[in-house]
Length: 298
Image (cartoon, rainbow, N blue to C red):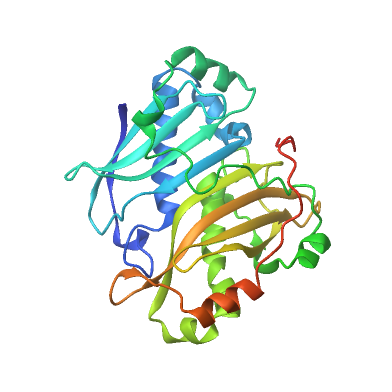
């Protein structure tokens, strides 16, 4: 894999878990992606402001923590696969461990064509650490209205207006700011489910896998709302669904799925839910409608 990014973890990039927050993980992965695409002449500088609108789906895995001041290297390679054309990952440059990885699908765009021409088919075992594990299909709920989402049990956990600093010079929302908006909103979901735990300040949340698909492009000054809910429940890990609506148009522009866990911030380990907590989660689980695998993304 080609080294296309180098940097480190800053204090202001760390969250309540005292490790690199997901939005900044993705920002560094995005830097790795841009530099790799430019180096391989899959895009030129004029393409950078519109690149977010060319991405059809992203699949991100978080394999290891990145703590304060960790030196990170970003690595890029094209992969000859039907669903994803490129893989980028961050590694701790001291330990060599993969910290996080991102697979991207550019659909039927010229970027995807150039990546396919560039790549040789990578053996699955060579990138098994980055390949989808707990999320193997798109959410395919872009056709839902907000009223339908609420009827299914989704809660509105985030809202706001997109600022110019979150977007490219062509006013397209950068993917890592989409991640950041969802991440910022999760406390509202957890506090609705476990108000006592959130009030104590002793627990936090961590994401281990994340998949996003797009059916539209959010832009500067667009008002938005995020609707989320729990779709799978386990003693240690839970699965979530997130829908991001453009309030100006009413369209569901972003579907996302995440697998996460609760963290004991003092012991720095995952929390195993007891029977009462599991029952509470099960009672609030969303029953998703039948998903059409052919549902179109943009």
